[in-house]
Length: 78
Image 1: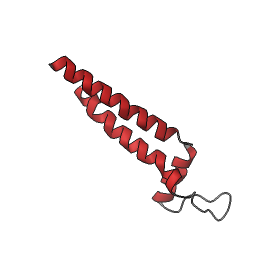
Image 2: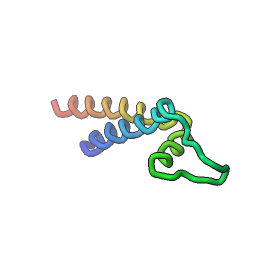
Image 3: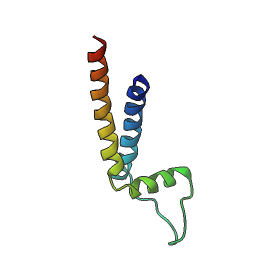
Image 4: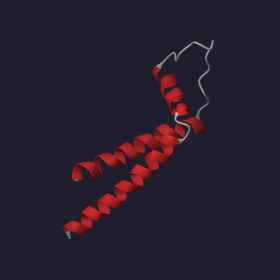
């Protein structure tokens, strides 16, 4: 349970950052309809755009869930 309480906030923050990228950066420009990303950053932006905000929602939910688990663990230890 302690491992989960450590992993969930980290995963929640990563997903939240991943989900907020489309709101900060524009979609990467592509030269033709069949062209792919030219570097890793463009691939990350394309994947985050495909999530349509779900990454942000899931990241915040995991982050909040982790706080509930941490408080519950502390209550059980006292």
